[in-house]
Image 1 (cartoon, rainbow, N blue to C red):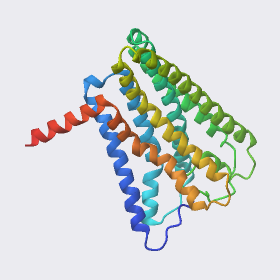
Image 2: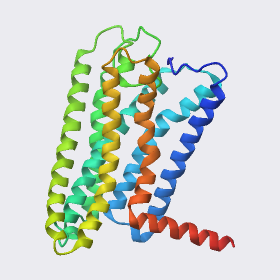
Image 3: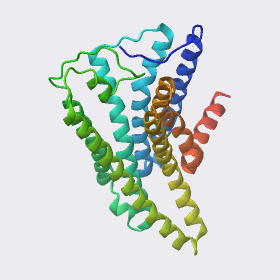
Length: 303
């Protein structure tokens, strides 16, 4: 079973409504972005195909945690069987890894689009695009499967996970034996993945900034469009990284209450998927225009 949040008497329904609303807005926002990109042929371009992959990743993170949290607030039931616990942990870790691999692929795509505009379509062909997206998910699956392979032959002695949701570390901490190899692999995987993604994104955006400043001298519209396109991607990356750093910092200070740690543990998983669709919708001109056009057309059709 999970410890979950401490819910003061009488506050269960309020927490339930807030969690349910968050889940519904997340589903609606990401669903609208996905629907518009899939149905609008003018958005069938590499950047938006990658945004679709990011939407799938966001939905994976949100659905791994929120439905169970909603039911927990509604019924007070905190027990969870071993297979659902492993499944939830697998989805949580897959979300964390895929977010970074997909954002790294998106940075590579933006780098080619801005720095090699004339060769962009010959470099980022449909085959290469799908290969890049498949690679992002393949690396995710491989890293997380290896992480969870350490659960084989580890008998569990504990019964209570001291968190709101299940994770690899939380489940293995219930084991009757220590798992140093899993700890080392987990740390090495996290460090190398975060560093690798950061280096790719930093390299891409340094080159993009340099190209924008050069091109911007002769054509301001080029610079504006490049900044608009890249601002969305950087904002999504920064929100994810800041949330992660806040969580790590909180766990380094034992004086911080467990409930605050648990709250931020949920925020890291829930906040990016909740706000990302709005970031795309506000800052990506083509997507914003397509959403407006679709809904205007539907309103006129009903009238």
